[in-house]
Length: 247
Image 1: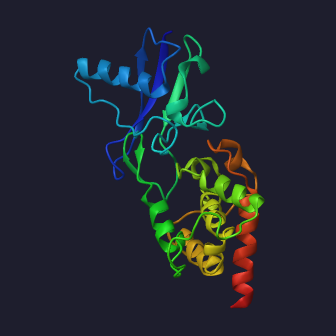
Image 2: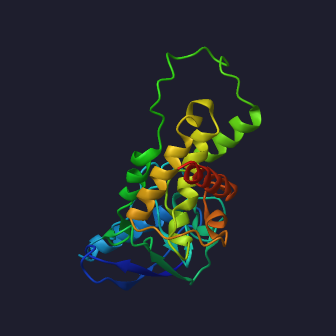
Image 3: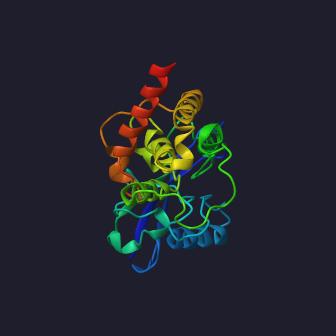
């Protein structure tokens, strides 16, 4: 199929960007979205045009690197998939596709479609870990954990930190990401010891980095490629409130 692509081009964070329009022909419906961009870049190189810079790594929906805003949606029109898992059969012959980077003050543009998401790393460094001495490695099942808690902790741990929640939220809030990381640890015995300190530290770092407040619209859950529930935000708020009350 033939497509028209409106692609955001921007040299760096300090340079004004703009959309450039490209035409690409004979795209296979079985190809992935990133494979289509590879074909576009091969075409641009042949025309002596600088190729489009975009992030990717595993191309298996695990790492979260392929962060693109496609036709007004994070990761495109499919449900519960990352951009690298999106296939061209979701588009129609002759369609115009608009491709942008994440839009958030905390995610400055590096180049074209690439953004700096190191703000997430800084939030994790602020509290997304267990530092208490829990002793040596215990035998399997030595620490009883209710299956419901273990399952919910694993569901939270499925967050890949792609940033779709931030890009989708009208306030550019990182609450879904942060709450998933808090739940991942706070539901387990090893993480309960520092649960309240962790909540305060991660909120402080999130605010410092320029993320907005939760909009309570649920858009983050709707666009999350891993289906992370906003119920984690409610738990996170409870942990934070308990910490503040104890202070």
